[in-house]
Length: 471
Ligand code: SF4
Image (cartoon, rainbow, N blue to C red; front, side, top):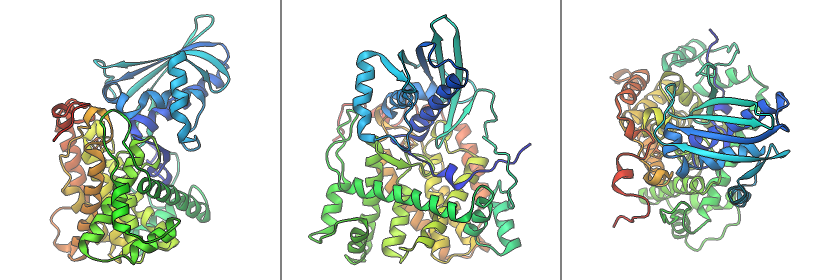
C-alpha cells in the first residue's frame, strides 16, 4: 500500500473562490472528465453534457458557485490562469444559450442539475458527468470532491496516495516529532527534505513564494475593493473601510510600502488586532467574490494563514523570503496530518475541519517562526484545534460569507493566541497531544448532525434565510 504523500502544493493550491470543495474540486473534476473525452476521441462526437450534483454540492452548490465551476471546467478553462473578471459574462452567455464550447472545441448542449434529495454513499460531495454523443453513446464518470480542492474518481483510492518514497514518511504528529528528534531538523527542514523528492529545492522555494505572492495580492486587493458581495445576501465589504481607517492619511502605492506603513503605524494591542482582522476579512471578501485565492487548506478558510503570516511580516520582523517559505512549509505539514488522520472537508466535519485546521496550521507555523521548539509548534497546533472542536458549518444561503468571512478573523486570532500560549508553556506538561485532538476532531465529525456539515440546513442558515437582514 503506497504511503500517502502530500506536498506543500497539494495543501496550498491557487484557484478561484469561493469554495475549495464546492468550486475548485468540481472545477478540477470537470477538467478531468473533459480530458477523458479527449483521450477517448469523444470531444467532437459529443452532442450534450449533463452534470448531476449530489448531497452537499446540490444543497449549497448555488451559493458556492459549483455550477459556475463545472461550466468553466467543461469549457477548458483553468482556475489558476482564468481571468476572474471574465467569469460572470462567460457564465451568463452559457446560461442564456444553454450551450458551451466543450474544451473550447465543440459547441454542445449543457445542463447542470442540483439533486437536493440525493446523496451518493461514498462522500457527500458527489458529482456525475454524462456526455451523450450524436450516435447515442454515453460516457459517464462520477467524482467526489473530498475537501481542499482534492478530487477522487469513483473507485479511485480516496486518499489520493502518491507513489513516492519520502525520506521522512509522516502520517501523524508523533511521526513528525520522531523525525525532528532523530535528525535534529526543524519542522520546516523536514518538510523541505520531503519536498526534494518531488523537485529541486529552488523549484520548491520558487513555488512557495508564488503561493505567497498570490496570497498577498489577494489580501491587498481585498483591502482596496469596496461594495457589496455577490449572491443576494447584501453583505457589505468591510476590509476597505477598515484599511482606510487604520492607514489614516499615510501614502503608499504597493504591497511593500503598504506593509511598511502598517509596521510603523502603531503597536497597541487594538491596532494590531484590527489589522489582523482586516487582513483576514480582505482575503475572504475576495474569496466570496470569485476572486483568485489560495486554498489554505480550503477556500472558506483561505484568510487565516495569510492573515497570520502578514501579522508575522508586519509586526514580528518576518519580512524575509526565507522566513516566509519556512512559515508556509510548516503550516502545510500540519494541514496534511489533519487530512490524513481526520478531514479537511466541511461536508465531512463541519467548520472545525476548515477554520479549525487553518488556525492550527497557522499556530504551528507562527510558533516555529517565532523561535519556538518543534514541540511548542505542535502544542500550538493542538491548542488551536482544541478550541475549534465541534464548530459547525452553517453558511447562510449556502454562500461563503456569513459566518465564514468573520470566522477567518477568529481563526487568525486564535492561532496567534495559541502560539503565544505554547511559547509561554512547557510542552512536557501538556495533557493533550496534537494526535489526540485530531482523533477527537474526527470522532466529533462523525457524531455531528449532517445538517451542520455544509448543507445550509441548520444553524444560522436556518435562522437567517437568504435575503433577510438580521438587525
Ligand atoms: S461555515 Fe466554515 S466550513 Fe462552512 S463554508 Fe463557512 S468557512 Fe467553510
